[in-house]
Length: 334
Image 1 (cartoon, rainbow, N blue to C red):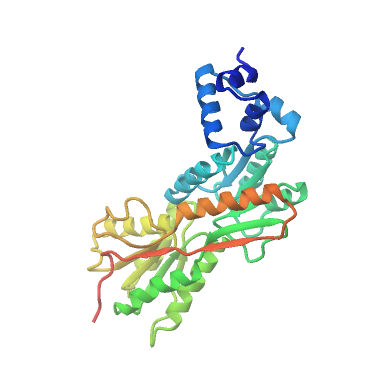
Image 2 (tube, rainbow, N blue to C red):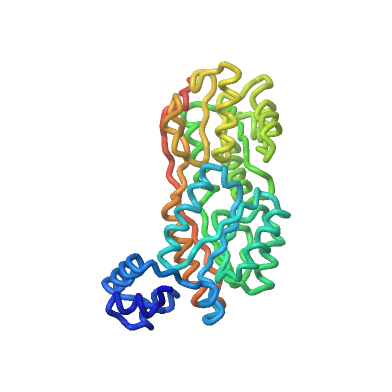
């Protein structure tokens, strides 16, 4: 069996240096790191993480509990986070909470069985029993994407600005002459949904003589979401523009438009909060708010590293600015 001593001999370094490398307990010079990585590759050495965990009290595992991995946005974000966390010599263990508080609690319990060094959590709801459990256990925690109105002490949070960018998106429709603008919002009880609705209401309230807000919510059930879109767009008078509160809502809107033989933007203008890879492949290309996923992952890793190094430091909240991507899905009225 290949040992750590064999790796050290092949790399020309001490066994303690190899130990610090595989356990992530000390900064290693880049040249030394490359030599050790090459030696591990050449010898086929496999680190016994269980034994190491017993010795050091660290598992080198980060738990990531996030919702709806099938969602294009939440499919991309864990991948970016995993890349950044790998630089910390940590392995990400991913579980899907399915946007349900009960599933989220069970998912976090599963993660805790692996004794993670920290947890990254995208809360399924503002009131989260899972977060309460993490606070009770004293596990270093960073909230990702969804920043609650009140972040508990010794917990960090990172997300994008939602209210202002949503207001800007709706104001763009107003500038193009739209007065009747509907919103298919995300799930109720989620901070991002609440903040985006506030931004939508801010913009709609400023429309002179406008009909006011018209809001329905998407659901975890596709049939319920389809019914919500029909409630928004299937009754007369139909709004001249509709906003998707997230990328799944936008896709549901586009599906309804296609099924009813309507033209975008000729019959109705469509915009969405959340960009996704094929937004530019729709015809017309969709106007969206693009979230800075790489920056979000980078900030997550930075907060995570600091929180693990000092679990008792004050709460830190990072808000990033998304980008308005103006394309072809808005008609000009008047």
